[in-house]
Image 1 (cartoon, one colour):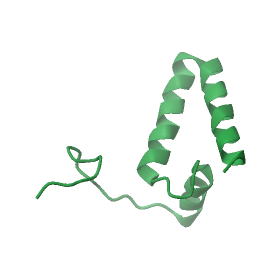
Image 2 (image 1 turned 45 degrees about the vertical axis):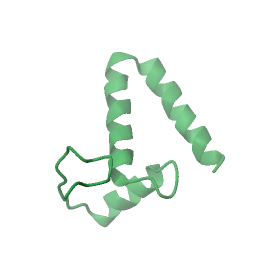
Image 3 (image 1 turned 120 degrees about the vertical axis):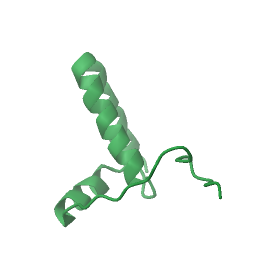
Image 4 (image 1 turned 45 degrees about the horizontal axis):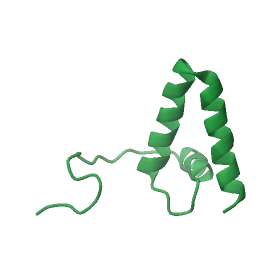
Length: 71
């Protein structure tokens, strides 16, 4: 049976998080129904961008903050 999610070709795993870490991830979501997959991918993308272009990473973080203000 084929999955209809955007994760079709990726295997799914479960990770354990403390409630504190989960709350921190919830606080980083741009919108209420953002998945943890999307939130963690966003964090990792910004982290990688920090290594290559810190100024661009900072502007990306500011953009995310603005999105959170207008929701």
